[in-house]
Image 1: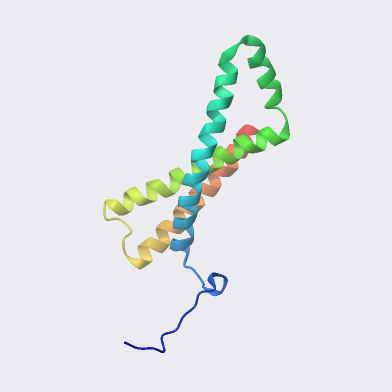
Image 2 (image 1 turned 120 degrees about the vertical axis):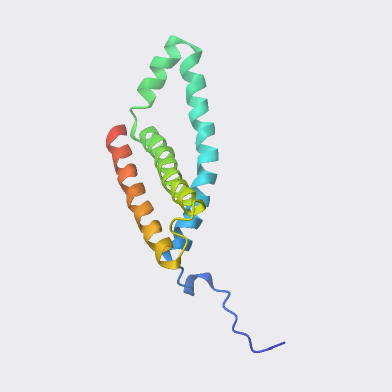
Length: 124
């Protein structure tokens, strides 16, 4: 066994390809969605409790902090969905090569950015 193997444990010095970056962000967005769905269900529960709570929740959701929270959850959903469709195409054999993977990652990232911007326009 070779004892002089290069060891690089400092992740900040490693240049990750775009395919790795979008894959890592896809996992992070999935975890964020797990927590975000809990917030959305809590809001739904509050809106269905009574008419007074619905009106109060409507007023609360006009505050910028809550609009940002809802936008963040919708943005995570848009990103996760775009990358999920990319993975579905790869499961069908489309974009499995190195060049195709990079192109697919760039296209999916562009679609995700457009969807996130549209979500921001819709919420605000």
